[in-house]
Amino acid sequence: MNKKEPMYFVYPAYFVEGDSEVVVSFPDLELVIEGDTYEEAFLFAKNYLKEFFIYSLKYDYDIPEPSFYKDIIKKGDRAMLVDTFVFPGDLK
Image (cartoon, rainbow, N blue to C red; front, top):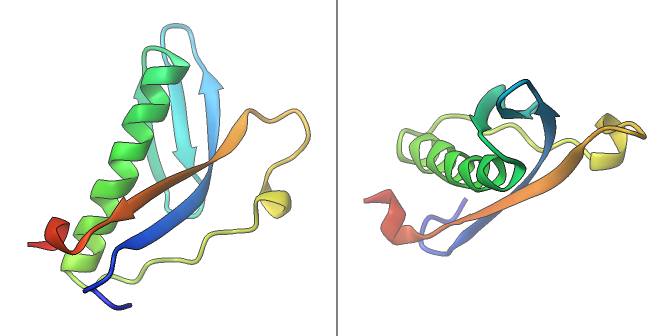
């Protein structure tokens, strides 16, 4: 990856409503985060995804390829693609 250009990442995520929170999981990355509402959970997931990639790129960790949405998301699942950008300045 060229660390001098902005990098764009898109990963599928599941949204599961609990009693008092919405849990978001990224199956390809084994990341889980939650928020009080769908909107909050989505925003937290975007931020968490960005922080994950910043950390992974800074320390040269392997980043798994995202699965194809259609291959892991089944009809009726509450899921969506979540994206983020990592800019060169984020890696300093």
